[in-house]
Length: 232
Image 1 (cartoon, rainbow, N blue to C red):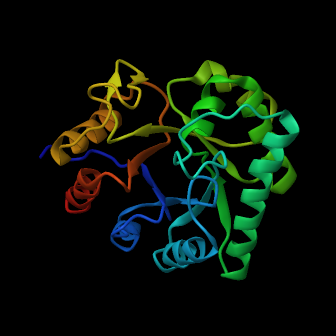
Image 2 (cartoon, helix red, strand yellow):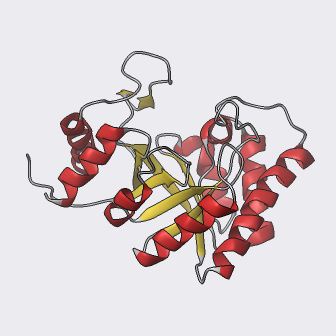
């Protein structure tokens, strides 16, 4: 394997109630955990378990809110009013933050899940509401956004104090700078060494602004890739 010339902050979506649960194996391998907080999956028990694991492994903790849609794992967009969407996100993040406080942890960032993440990437109104939630809860919270869409996020970076973390996905397929939609051929990378190579390419080729690289906990080969990187 090619020698890694540098490293990027690795994040992973956790607390998603998978069976078997991979979180304890993944947490020592990452820098940031985005923990499901009840929208697409998760409850107080799973959130607390994930928070405690993150604390034990000195991993930064993020809220992973979603549309309230466990049936579809938060992967379908919902047509909500501005107030409804604000309340949906605010209530998930605020409750999750309270659980962090109760367990001696600090909330570091927010990364929306699934369709909410997609909508934030493509709809200015949803992005604005996400920023309004951060302003209402804690303006020091970072917001994880999809890399390669700098124009969409430029206003936020220029006109607010909210820190954006531009994210790519090690285990998702890309066409040039655009992520391949789920369901299309090549959308999910299923070979650990291919995932490691893409991680290396993001580090070395720097196709756009990248702050953090995501590995998905529901992709077994992504976990294998994380273990390879740990030993690199």
